[in-house]
Image (cartoon, rainbow, N blue to C red; front, side):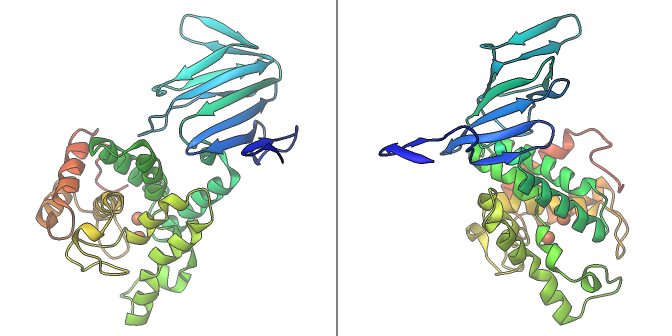
Length: 310
Ligand SMILES: [Fe+2]
Ligand SMILES: [Fe+2]
C-alpha cells in the first residue's frame, strides 16, 4: 500500500489487508472504527448473501459489481446484476443468493463482520468447542452460552460494539482451557490445590490467546468470567462494579448451563432448580440486574432450549 496524500492509501489490485474463505473469497479492503469494506468473489454455483447474527444491529450493504446472482423466495425469483444492492438494517432473516455466474460484490458493514469469516476466528471457535468437549460438555455448550448471553445483552441495552464482543467472549469463554493439561482437565476426582491453581489460570490464558487477534476486545470477558460479586471468584477476586457487565452476563449463562448439564462430578439439575439457585445467589455472586434479565430470557424460551441436560 502506498500513501498518496496524508491519510489516503492506495491499494493496488491483489493487495487486500486480509483474505479469508476457501470457495467464496473475502478480501478486506478497508476497515476503520468498526466499519468494514469487503470485496467478495463468489464462484458460479456458490451461495452468498446476508445472514442475521443474533444480537447484531449493523447496517450491511451488498453491492454487485459484476456477474449475476439469483434470489429465490417462496413465490418469486429475483435476478441481481451489476449495480444492484441489498441492504439490511439490521438483517433479520437470512437472504441467500446463488451465483449464476462468477460474481464480484462489495460488502460494507457498520460493524466488523470480517471476523465472522476470517480463518483465525474459525480456528479459535474450533479450539473452544474442542476444549469444552474434553471438559465433559457437548458441542452445543459454546453456542448455547453465546445465544443466552446475546439475548441478555440485548435486553440490557448493550451498545452494538459491546454486543459484538459479548457474542465472541461468550462463545470463547473457556478457550484458555486449551493450555490446561488433560490430566487436570479430565481428572474425574477432586483437584489438588496445585491442580486447581492451574485450572484457574484458564481465564488468564484465554485473555492472552485473544490478545493479538481480531477479537482482542473480547479478551477481558474471558479473563473475568469466573469473578463473583462478593470477591469469591478468580483469578483476581474482583468485587462488585470492578467486574465487567459483559463478563457477569457470561458468568450467569455459563453457571446456568453448567448446573443443567450432567458432568462427571454432578448430575444435571432441572431448569427450576437452576433458576432457584441463581435467585439465591443474586446480589451475592451475580449482579441482580443480570440474573433478572437472564431469568426473563430463559422464561421465554422453548422447553428444549431451557434444558434438563443434553
Ligand atoms: Fe471458565
Ligand atoms: Fe463453560
